Image (cartoon, rainbow, N blue to C red; front, side, top):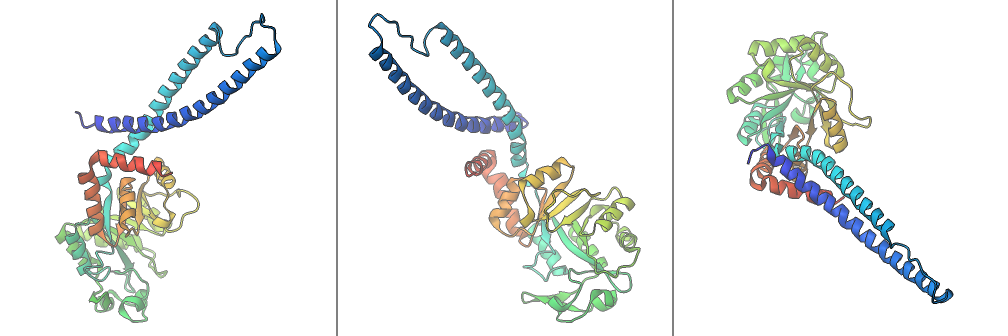
Length: 357
């Protein structure tokens, strides 16, 4: 069997199931209506018999050649409608089946590295993410006082280093001497150059988030691109930011780069932004948002997904990526869905989910 036929066969199967449920429901309704109609007709016949002479001819509704022709026409129309509905649902379900078959395409991104193997945004966490099998690592970059860059999420060092110091007030050299601690682990704050070199060594793609502290130099984006260019990784990385201005400047300076816009809380639908993908916080996730984003030409990445069932739901829905603190669990879930269950199992999941609505 040709591989391309599999989604269509599955789509036809799902359509048959959906229409079958509809027909069964409709038939039960029709049976009830017909039973009530027959009871009413019987009552009318008896009424005629009770009030007319024996010689009177009683015409019972629902009999005769005219009614037969009407019934034939009704069956023809019903069959035609069912064929149209079947074709429409098959086309709609085809995309669902393609998504299910391609669910292994959902990228697993380790959030700030793998925090079970190292403090977030440190070199041990990057190494741990590679060992866990992450497809890509999402990490944060911030500009220092001297216009260089370190890998850091917080604008202040209080949480991880126990020092009430701001990144914007320290040079790269000062920051990379500071130790950060979490979960019984510790490491130095890495420079962007150190992070890049290790990612090259590990052959591990990266999603770089540009974090702002409010005191950046006007040439932040060109300066950052210069560091990446010198390392030869600019076009091997992808990028995202909460700042629309940064996102659109990146696309303006380097249209070929893959750049995303982060939407932490969404109430107004898909934003209109010069970007390649949208990163949405999972509390704002909806299948409607994803469908609209895809229709508008954006890929969709969801963060931060740490619950196994939610991982499976997003992978089943074929979102383009999930950012997670547990990349090992996400990889296992994706492998289970893509290999162990196969299309039949995923079709069963789809039917189960639709039956629950």
